[in-house]
Length: 289
Image (tube, rainbow, N blue to C red; front, side, top):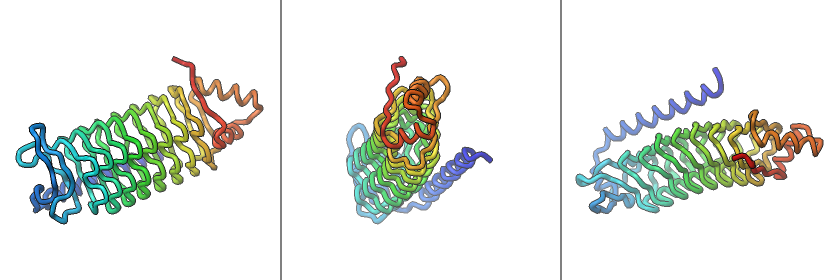
């Protein structure tokens, strides 16, 4: 069985497990959501402000409270709280900055596809977070959204995803593989910097931009394949990737032509050109339209 197949099976198993847990929690929930959560009501719907008076830690945000749809989670709503799991329903359209920042006990999250963007520092520094399901519909992962989530070993990227923001997964020390779906176009500055366990990266052919230091300090990456659609690779994108010994470019890539010319002019072999990248000496901008 191919490694990619094994990864897909692992992600599928994680999805099933989390969904089963969510269903079990929903069926076992005896507390009234108005006891578990604090919230505000307007004509447009309900915004969750944080935990209420109950000691519930497995949080399933309901679709409705007092007959009104739950449409938002406020900025900093659960920051520094002791919640252990989270399910966001498809009625929620927006989540505020730092909504779940520094939730040290949070282990699993299911994010509905009705949420277009995960905001800045949404799950920043959630040390125990190991299971994340992003459903199709999420287009943007904001800056530092999952930064310093040390237990996060893998994550599914839905086909709807277009942009991964600056430092979105920086210093996720357990993240070992990432497999992008076809929609991702932008990987922001430092997006995966310091992911020391990251060894396998499958980039989508839709990708156009790899930001500055995007994979800097990813000391387990040995090879890297660049699709031909990539037009820009930022400064120090692979700096301090100490095991990087091969960078391959898809046939037809403007960068492949530039790289071959540079190697020829500098009299470098391919491993030497990889060293050139990991020491932070390369940057590429394509003139292709």
